[in-house]
Structure formats: structure tokens, C-alpha cells
Image (tube, rainbow, N blue to C red):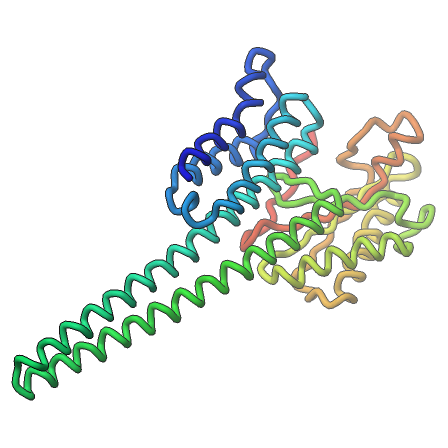
Length: 307
């Protein structure tokens, strides 16, 4: 089994090593995934208890490495690397849970050994010694039952975490979320609003509904809704429109059950453009709402000052 995973590790890194001479594209997320993979491969519990999950993680990392070697977009590489990290984490959690199960089995065998010793002692000792042996047996049984309960709780928690992570991953991929230092960023383009209006259309509401589902499943996360416009029109009008659009998204989220205290808004007007305002297409890119989903249990850092 270890030989199989060594082979898997070599396969997962083959694309990266083969392309070193051409300096392949990489990202921090891909580097993290590779490091996580090495750590998991060096953990004998993973190869023993989670071979299928680790094989899936290997395949996922291969796809990310291939994308890097082909110099595909950083977004594509990051998305594939993120999936690989999740698969590796799942394999580690499964191995952890099954290791706990193995410890339960060992505790059960130990309990049987204690029972056999107690029965042998009963034939050789007086009633007082037999009573002491029975008390010892009761203690061993209680410890085994407690260990079993802990293992079941750990396994259930790992399964819930894996399910929630997979669901979160699927929704964020569907929303084309981008991982940043501030958190995951979902961009709602100008086409999801009426022209020069702040009301979300049906497609915009559908996008916000998916984000509300993520918030419901991750109660320790918050969002910051930031509105932006192009440079067309006056600064005051642009700032007002960006604020109203951010507020419209925040209102839609709270209407879908997200507590108001978990949603903040900012309107920047024509500041922080993502493209030059020299063509209609570029101006449309600047007319947007960015929804920043905080990292787990962390506050959202402020936007860096515009240069």
C-alpha cells in the first residue's frame, strides 16, 4: 500500500518536475496543496485507512499540476488546487476517524484480556480478590465504552465537516469565487442590475440566494458587500449608485435569513477600477458589486488604499 502512495506522490509531482525547465505557472494555493500532499503521503495512517480518498486527492493534484504546467489561468490553477487541498483534507480526516476505530478495537481486545485474567484469578483467589478483579473489569468496560463514544463522535464530526466543505466548495466554484487575502470574493456584474438602477434582477437574486446558503452553513463567517461604478457620470451620483447597489445585495441577503449583523456594506463609486474606463466593455467590468466572504472565524481586513 505504501508503494502505491509513493507512486501516487511521484505521479502528482511529475508534471511539475517535468516542466521546471520552462518555469511553470504556480500559485500559493497550489504550493500549499503540494505541501499538504507530501504531509499526507508521509502519514502511514492515510495510506492504511483512506486509500480511496487519497487516490482521489492524488488525481485532483495531478489536474492542478497539469494546469500549471500548461500555464493555464491563475484562476483555473487556484480552483483545481483548492479542490486538491479539500480532497487531501478529506483523506486525512477519514484516516483520523478510522484510526480512532482501530484504537477502539485494541481497547476491546485489552478488555477481553482483562476479563480472562479476572476469570483465572477467581479460580485461585479468595472472594475478596475476585471482587477487586470485577471492579477492575468494570473500569475497563467503562473506559472502552467512553473511547467508543468518543470515536463515534469524532467520525460523525469528520463526516459533517467533509460534507459541509464539499457543499461550500461546490457553491463557491459555481459562483466563480476568487480566493484573496481578505477572503473569498464573489463578483456580481452590472448585468445583474437594471441600467443605472440598484434593484437586482432575477439572475442577481439567484446568485445572492446561493451565497445565503453558504452563510447559513457557515455561521462563523461574515460578508462585506462593496459597490463600484465606472467613471461615467458625476462622482456623487456614482458613489450613491454604488452604495445603493451594495445595500440592495445586503437587503437581499438579510431577506433570505442572513442576520443583519453579519452583513456590512461599502460604496466606492468609481474608485478601485479593475480595468481602464476607455471602452464600453471595460466600463462594464468596473460596474460591479464584490461580495467578500470572510475566512472562517476571522474578520475581513479593510481594502488597501488606492494608489
